[in-house]
Length: 409
Figure (cartoon, helix red, strand yellow):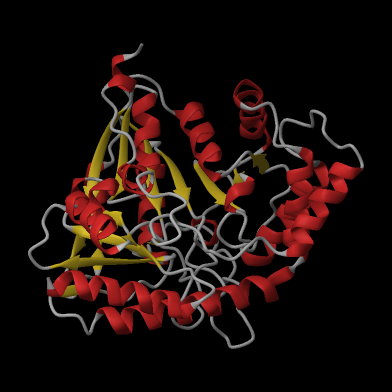
C-alpha cells in the first residue's frame, strides 16, 4: 500500500459522527446537508426513469439534455456561452477529483485557501502533490478574512493549481469580485490553473446585487450576476462572472446543496473548452464511466423547479442562520460571525482549544453533534462547525440549549 494513503488522516467529522449515527437522541448538525428530503418532483423523475428501465451505461460526459439544461442554467446566472463546456459527474467531490487528476501529478505545487473542507486539500495529496496552505484569519468578532497579497505571493510559475472554495466551508468567507479578478490576472501571468469549488453559490445571504467592475487588464467585462425580484443577487460572486472562456479555470458545482440532493451524488463542472472537456471524458471513463441515468433525470427535474425553489430555500436557510446566531451570541464565551454564504456557523468557545475532544464530549454527554474545527485543518483548531440547514427551526433552539448546558458545567 502507498505510504501517502497509509499516513493520510481520516475525516475527523466522520470520527465524531460515526460514534452516534442513527441515534435518535442526538441532535446532529455535523454534516453539510439540510434535513429536508429531496423534492417529490425530483424523486418521481428518477422513479419514472427506473420504471422505463434506464439502468444502462450512458455517455461519459452525461446525458445531452442534462448538459444542455446545465448550460442554460449557468448562462442564466453568469453571462456567457457554456455549450461544450459542461461535464456531468458523480457528485461534486468527484468533479474535484477529476480536476485534480487532470492537472496535478507527483511533486507538483498546489496552493489552497484554508481552513477548508478536507477533501479539497487531500485530493492533490493523493496524487502526490505538495499542498501549500494560505490561511484565512479571524478577527476578534470571528469574521474570517484573506490576505490577498499573501495568496498572490504564494502562487508562482511552478504552481500548477490554486484551489479556492467560496463561499467557504466551514467559515462562510466569500471571495469578492475584485479579489477574483486579481487572482485570475496573476494566474494568467504564472500559467496556473484555478480550480474553484462554488457548490454554495446559491446559498448566498450577502447584500444587494453586485455588478462586475471594469477589469484592469484590458479584457472585456463580463455580465452582471443574476438578481432576484428584490434586487439582491441570487448567487455569490463567481469566477465565471470575471473570467474569459480561455482562462485556465475549472468551476465545480453540485446538486447536493441547492436542490437538497446530497445522497444522489450528482455534480457538474464548467471547463474552458471542448478540448479540455474531451480529456475530462477520458478521466470519467476511468473513474466511474458515467453518472447513473436515472439520477441524471432527477437532476433535470431539479433544474426544472426553477429559481423560485432555490430562492425560497435560500430564504429559509437565512432565517435559520439568523435564528441560530442570535441564540449563540447570547452565550458567554462564544465567538461567532455572520457568514454571508454557505450552510454553517463557525464558532469558538473560550477555553476549548481541542476541538475534537470538545466535539466528542458534547456528543457523549449532551447529545449534540457538531463538526470539530480541526477537521478542516490546523487553521480551524479551537473552532466548531454547526450546519444550520434545518426544516425545524426549533431543533436549532434545542441544540443551543444543549450547548448552553455544556458551558454551565
